[in-house]
Length: 75
Image (cartoon, rainbow, N blue to C red):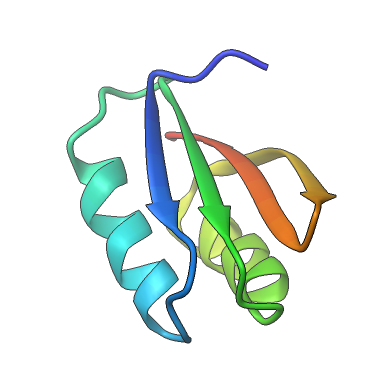
């Protein structure tokens, strides 16, 4: 999946992946896609809930070698 920006949040514990995601998505234009890489298992639920509450769209999430990847489209 194509993304406009990639955020490396690997090795960060909650709530830092959300804090960094919020900062990164603020730098994007509406409709652009942020790709996030995280290793915190809580990030999956956290990012899904944060996307919904912020009016963004979680397009896809995958897990590969203990790294969670998320694609969030800015609302």
